[in-house]
Image 1 (cartoon, rainbow, N blue to C red):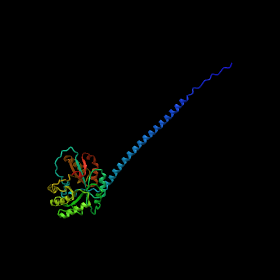
Image 2: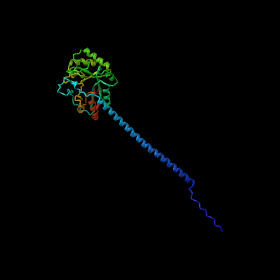
Image 3: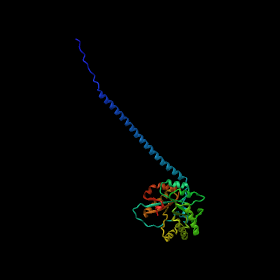
Image 4: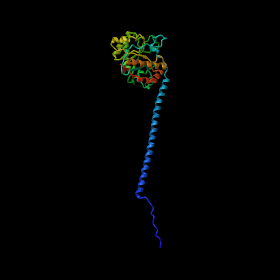
Length: 319
């Protein structure tokens, strides 16, 4: 009798289970691809961020290098010619005006005027500092013929008017003298108004003799008032008559408190900057005057953190 073979069926997975495995496989595959893309995107964005930060840092370094290069091209000069009535043995300029102590909760104001602005590189170097400064332009002459054209490109500026000094030999070709007639002074002021139509403030370049002459200052103030121009005394002499003239006219007397660069060394200029800030804190405001010399601009650049204690303003915000 033949034996019947028993049939053993193999355990084969069902069709549904196979479909499930296939689906799971593809889900995991897609997830893996998405994860990979995310990682790549993250690192790509991270690298882009690093590249952008590096670019910005390099740009800042380039600006600093550019400013440093410009500063090295400027001749070092002293501002002693501004107050030549002092004995040669005396280095300090005339003191600023006497002022009352002002106790205020407001942030003190400091206006820094940069005198003798005459050339394109002066303007570029000053603006490269990124500080709120007031440029005071010398009138055009054969030596610096483009000063008025340069000023015209600026929204605000002053005019640095050459005036007669006691002993200075290098005066500008057109300089106001103490014995000039009222008509001559009026004509010159009118001409300056044509050259610098946006100017609302004048200050004196040298002028130790002119500003010490009350009659001369009266004639000048008459001409300036007719053009609606205000005057700021650079105080190039301790004998200035500007306070008296202003009082008689019922006008405020506004003057320089500190010369920044009578000593043209960087550390000395920094000390003067600190002094100007102290005066501003004591009186609520102060005016400092400097020049577009290499070391003056360097000292200003390296003193930026000090200006956090004051509100750096242009002179039109002063009065």
